[in-house]
Image (cartoon, rainbow, N blue to C red):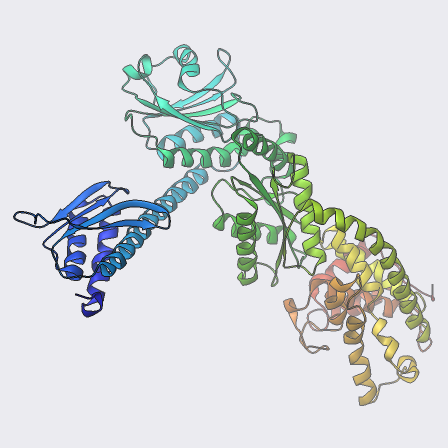
Amino acid sequence: MSAGKRDMSLVHGHLRKAGQAAVQGSPAHAAEATVGALRELTAASHGELDWRGATEHALTFGSGPRPEQSPWIVDLRIGDCEFGSIALWGGEFGYEDLETFADRLALSLRAAELEHVVAEQQAWRTSVASAIAQVGPPADLDTVATRIVTQARRLLHGSAAVLVSGQPPSARMWHDGLYKVSDAELHSLLPQAAPPLALGDVWSGSIDDGPLARQGLAAVAAVGLGAEAGERTLIVLSADAEDFGSAERNALTDFGISIAPQLQAGSSEQSERRALVDPSTGMPGSSYFEERLSQETARAERHLRSVSVLVMALDNASAELDKDLIALSQIASSDLRVGDVPCRVGEDEVGVILSDVETMDAVLIADRLRAKVRESEAFTMSNTLSVGAATFPARAGSAKELREAASRALGWARGDGADRTFVYERDIAASLEDEVAEDLERNDAIAESLRMLADAVDGRRGANGHAMRVARIARQLASRMGLPRDRAERVYVAAMLHDIGQISMSEETLGSPEELEVAAQDEVREHPDIGAQLLAGTPFNDVRLWIRHHHERADGTGYPDNLEGEHIPTEAQIIGVAEAFDELTADRPYRNAIPVDAALAELEDCAGTQFTPEVVDALRSLADDGYLEASGGDG
C-alpha cells in the first residue's frame, strides 16, 4: 500500500515520539512510538528496529510466530553515516515507502538526540556561570581559593575538591570535603591523583587504593589553572567511579579558565592586580589577555588544535566609553561559551580568545555579535561593531603574531566603512602594505588640498584661522569627554574641514552680517551636506556624518536633518560647540570678540536647546583648567 494513502500526520507524530523517547533512554516508550509509526505506515505483522545510537537497543514488535519468509530490511542512515536498520515481516507497503520512512525516522532520532545534547550543554553552561558568579570578584588568595574549591565541588556534584598551588612538598592547598586525610598524605598522593596540567588542560581517572580510596573516593578530575604545567591545579574527587565524563570535564575546563584571573589577582601584589583587571570596567585587562593567549596557543600547539582571536571596537564612541564597553562585554558573554572571557585590550577595544575554534566559526561568532550590537539598546547611543579575526596556527605562528593579526584585521574593518568583520590573511596583508605606501602619498595630497580649501573658505568670510582654532578646541573637548586618542584625532580632522561646504556659497551670503533672506538661509543650511558630499571617496569618509550634522540642535530644530539629543553624533556636537565658542571669541569684520567668560555664559544659556549640556560642561572644565583663551584677532 502506498504511503500517500495513509494519514502521514499520524506517522510523523509517532516519529517525533520515537526519537524523543529513544534519546531520553526509554526503550519501552521508544518501542511503542516506533511500533505505532511502522504499523500506521506498513501494517506489518512483525518488526525490529536496531538503533546504535544513544540507547543502543533492539526494539521489536509483533506477537505469535514470525513469518518464515525473509524480511524487508532498510538501513537507518544520514549521508554516509549508518547507525541502524529496520526489519519488517508481512504488511502492505512498497519498498520506497519503507525507505522514506527510514530516512524520516533517522532524521527524527538524530534531531531528538541533538536537542538532548544542546539542552544538556545549556544546563551545564548555566551551572558553570552560576559557579563563576559565586566565586565573585578578585579578593585575597585565601578567600578566592576557598570559594573556588567550594564551587568546583558543587558544580560536579563531587564528594571533595582540592586546589593546589605549587609543587609538593612545599605546595599550598585548600580543600573542601576532605576531613580524614592529612596535608602530608595529600602531598604524597597528588602526583598520583593528577599529572602536571597547564591552564585549561583537563584530566580524569580512577582512584584504586590509598587514603583517598579508604574514604570511599573512586574517581578524580583535574584542570590546570596556571601558566606553567603543575603551577596550580584544581582537583575534584567523587565516590562514583563513573562520575566524570566528557560533559563534566568540559564544565571543569570552562570553570577553571574563567576563574583563573581571580586566582592570579588574589596571589598578586596590588600593582599586578590592577594590570590583570581593568579598574574602569572590572573586565580582565590586557595583561590577563596576553598571558591567557600565550597559554592557549601553547595548548593548541600541544594538542594540534586551533585558537582564534576576535578584537572588536564600537564604531560610535561616546563620552561614556567605559559604560559602553561594559555593555559590549555583557552582550558578548551572553552569546559566547563560559570560558570565552571578553577582555579590555585597548582604550576602546575588546578582545576574546576562542579556544578550539576555526576561522569560519570565528567569523560566524563575530557576525552574530555584530547583529546583537545593532539591535541592542544598552549603549549610550545606537551603535555598530567592527571586528578583526585571526586564527592560530593557520594565519599566525605565535601568540604575539595572532594578537597583532587580529588588530590589523580590525583596522581593515574600520577603514572599509565599519560594521564589518575582516579576517587576517597574510597575502592580503602583503598586498595592503604595498597599497598603503601608495595611499599615504595620495592621501597626503588630498589632505593638503582640503586644508587649502578650508583656509580659502575662512579667508572669503574674513575669519582667517577659524578652521584650525575650531579643530584644536574640538580635539581638547573630545579628549576631556573621554573619547579615545585616535577618535579625538579624527574629530580634529573633521573640525578642520567642517565648513568646506561653504565654498559653494555666494560672496554676499558669506560676508553678510545682517539677517539673511530666505534664499540665502537655504544656501547656508545646505553647506554641511555639501561638505559631507565633498569628502565622499576620500580618506576622510569616516568623518562625513559629523560634518553633516554639526549644525543640528539638541532640541531638534537644527539642520539639515532636524536630529535631536542623543541622535546627534557626539563628534558633531563637539564640533558645534567648538565652532560657536570660536565665533564668539574671535574678531570678525562686522563685530568684535567677546571675553571667554562671556562666551561660556552665552553657551551655557543655550545648553539643552542649541547645545548638548555635557559638551558645554566639558568646555567650561577646559576653561577652568586654563586651556582656553579668546582668539582675538585673525591668527
